[in-house]
Image (cartoon, rainbow, N blue to C red; front, side):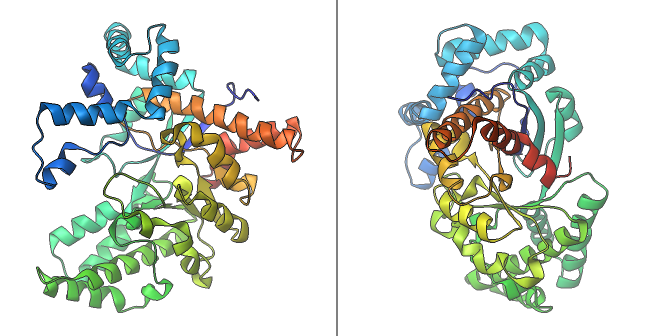
Length: 395
């Protein structure tokens, strides 16, 4: 297997984490594990969330391959047994001894992580990015999630003229003066990726908002989709104005996601629409488990990038397969490393380790099969781990 452990990393999609100095083992698991549902999921189904239910949820989180990989790598880092209890105690002692910022910075340095491109639309309320930068010790570049703005405007109850003005001005201010390097949308969670490219027609937003206001409690699914499609298309135009990338959630997410509506292929009509071809799109999560579709889109459309976050690290041992299948069609210059991790510094480090391991395995097989040389594999790894994101975000 190729060894890329010394190569630098730019994480093209992740989330800032809030400071947590001391955590119990269960709190540590809840802060950074993926999957297993949640207490809210059970309560909404009328299930009593007692101690047994919480134990069951915790076990599901601990029983994923991703989580077990993370435990093993952190056990090596701390020099302790690969148990939640030993690792939680080790991180608490390290933070108490050297301070939270120093602890986080050492983990990022160990993973060779140089830049984090963060979606600060999660967690909410949004954290102070200056504080986050100081604690991580790495370059932090935010992207602006449009759904946070949309919800604020809907909650405010303003009419269409003010809604439109504040929407456009807020995005322009974020990209022009507040240091945001791009936009992000989770419209896939809301109304799906089957977005009508003609939704930018002048009156669609106004008519949709008026219908939505009138609907109150009487349905309104059609106006919700119509409004969100319109606002998504307006956001594309702002990205073109500022030459800023647009991150679009595709594929897997938490238990609330409508997975069938998140397929990258649903974006095809929108992405090839002539008015939007100048916008650079990053398909977040590469649409996993529909990642072959994202790789195809990146092949036939020159303004499409794929980030392999969430499949890495949360799909565990599938990382090498995901990379190999995306590269079946996607140009090497259009694939970016990403993690989608959150919660605490530890998964940023272990995700970088897993990403390099999976990339070494996938590219090693391509060498064995005669598709590239060792030198070409080294160049490809540099591009995927850091340089493609640097080019896309002009770092």
